[in-house]
Length: 112
Image (cartoon, rainbow, N blue to C red; front, side, top):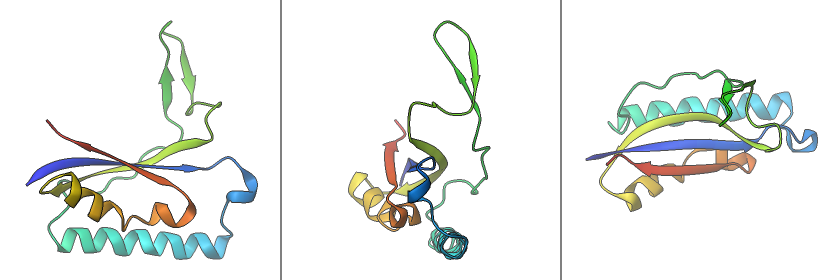
């Protein structure tokens, strides 16, 4: 099995695209259930971690900005590393990612 990085992105800035509290609670349950199933299937390469949603951006001129890119609506909100046979297998796993329920995307990268 190879390791694949899954990067989860979603628009967290456009107000009308944000879920209600009830929708978000259900969405978070879907994430927990998905993580539990990945762990049970032996597909997680490392434990799931929570990441600071703001972070820092270091620019070419060495200035540091707080938060993600302000000009980009879709921001990274999480990553996991999974085990899969190949890209097709990794895509099949990623297709169950709850971020897709809210219009997000999953970027998939294989460790080389």
